[in-house]
Length: 47
Image (cartoon, rainbow, N blue to C red):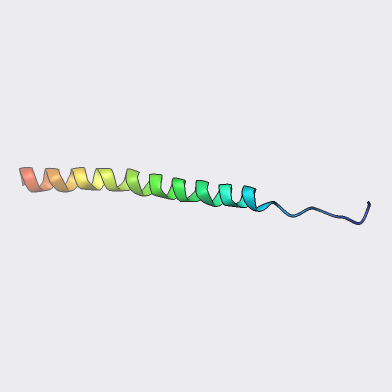
């Protein structure tokens, strides 16, 4: 038993981690994109 070492992480946990990363990336891009669209609309309508 002493020589087993650390057991590898299961695929289910790895898949959940990559899913969370993709969700965070999509959320970040959305937060960056919404103000950009608003700024462009304000620039087009008022200048």
